[in-house]
Image 1 (cartoon, rainbow, N blue to C red):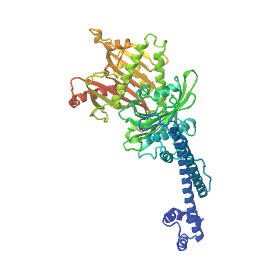
Image 2: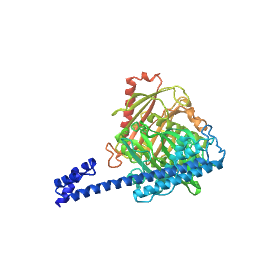
Image 3: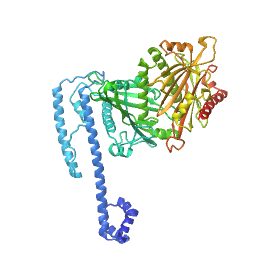
Image 4: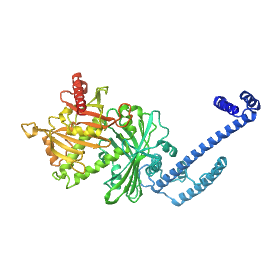
Length: 633
């Protein structure tokens, strides 16, 4: 007992430290240690031998894991290069390339491949002897080697290096996405807070190496998965995801801006199979306390089988300083079902700088409710339902289809302007007038000068987020049903009753709807009539109430189904999401409500002329709105 305790003391106190300095002690040193600990010399000798063997085994296991990972990466690069060789492109003009003498080139590749196989076989036999275990004898050719073979073949075309890198990365990301889509527990756990599932990062890190390298300091991960059946074919959804404008329209309110920077491949054989493009987007949560997620990523679409598609996204340049968000392999797996429906499995995996997010929103985002898969699925379902409502001859049958399309288009523009004013996305240039502070809104100013589709002059955008102690769904229902004059400080006098009501769901009771609200105030002429355009959206991840004043001529344009792109809108509204309080503990304890007001100042010509009286007036409007919301609950 005493001997064991002495050995333990030696290991804990000085053994490892002495071992680092001298792993091979002399006979004299072993004797000194034995006398000091009152144990035999043999025990000291065996301890050092065991320690050396242990470290050697750990090192060999680590090297073995690294070799396996490198071998897998080389295999994927080889597959990607094979895909490129099937359809080579000229890096100067982008056209189809030709190989002058295929037989000579193929012969050289065969000779080089045989040489590489021999080298690889010799290498694996050495490693097997070193580790005492056989390694895979599957031969893969690294991309650099294949490039050197091609350059020695004197071919008259080159494969663009960057495009090849994108293809390799996209192929690896798709493999990861498919595994994440097919594996269930214990890799995925049910998400009680926001629906869907959350990733078990302990299991994930055990089976998947870090795809984008080590996370920067302060970064955390959120990953979610959700499934649903949507009334849309897989190919239609793939086409929409590969079109920046359609993608943004499909997820209105979530995507602030998006562009396709470069189309690397449109697909093969006249289809979208193998389509690869470089994209840039801003993903937003409607609050001044949550930074917009700016992303630069590759999007890759592949047809796995008939009626089965996969679309994967992956951040590039993710190691550049200043990036607050990194998109790990994310996307959707699509399976066609009968009657034109598709089973969609959506996966979102993001690493982001948690310090940039307000404490009041951290639990919301970490749980996946803020930016997770369930929010994307809910938005997709809502988009499909709105298209069905517009096209249906039985729903909203009292309105012409052109009227419904025009009304929906105007509401979408209003929603986009409102979200951009809160999140400052879509390339808008705003001047800071007053920063967000405790009990004070953030006030920005913008000078609109074109007059086409926007008001002329200085517009201020005031935004403020506050916690309200009631569930977001209950608060949304109360705001819709209670007297509007309690909380709407701008439009309550002219938003009294429905003139037009367009449900965008499965029936008349859907919370997702567009309305034109009519005033009881009498005007001299019809052109003097002022009404309110309003859209409401609600699902388990949050709710929106957005509204703007419009005049009678605008209503006439909408009723006739005419172009509404020139209509100037000045929207205000409320965004309501589940709130977790300051500490984020104990599940949903209330709601986080963001108030957004946009005001036109015709008497001000530049943002520098905004006076303290104007700021006080704006602060008062926001404070009265917040107080009204609190009074309702």
